[in-house]
Image (cartoon, rainbow, N blue to C red; front, side, top):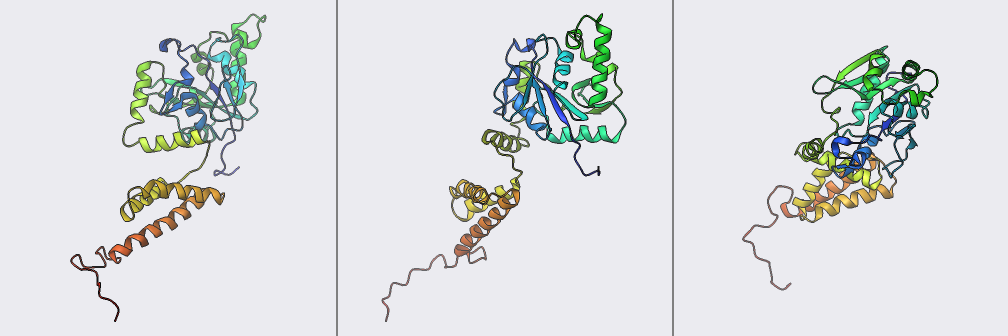
Length: 309
């Protein structure tokens, strides 16, 4: 494997907690930026070979495999064990379903750090330096062995592994593993309270984030996975608005997208269609300025109404 090849992995997303600090609300379904928290997390691990969500099934933005701990509500270690039973990759990303700022780059960074070292796992720490074992990448074998050892310690041999893990805290798992820690207060921010939800909703509407958030939300809503040059499309919209008329801006960008779709193209097709439309807008504008920024006809000129001789 070269350093340029992505590390194959499965993902386990824990989404079955009671959300007591939210009054029992359906936390994975709460929306931030128009998207359910669970769907935001699923978008961050979209390139996983298999994604297992440990919770009761619900509609999601992309297909996943469902699992449930026994008994339901038995806690994060029992849920993790249930999810791992459906994975086959040598590496697994483990995530909670309440991470509004998790991005694919964060998942890739965790996997890159895992591959670069010898540790059993790589996890994020939050703004206060606390471990966040549900924003982490692990070697699957090490994780399974640690869970099995905890189950043996917690039981007298009469309980199945999942049952023996009931109620055990996550810190028991992190203490049993050799872990690398990566500070990231933003990606590890989770929504445990209504104040957390309000903070997340406010942040994505800040000027520096709102366009990226909106584009991601629209792509999820429409079921498309396409990376586009946002700046190029904004420049095109500006040129159409200034060189033609303001309503031309949204219509032109729509037509560019439609043309790219008709050609079954990806980002390159969008870029080429945008280039052609931008050139057309410039030619349109040049007809009124002569390409000099000045009108072709003097402002005080009057039409020549004389009949042909």
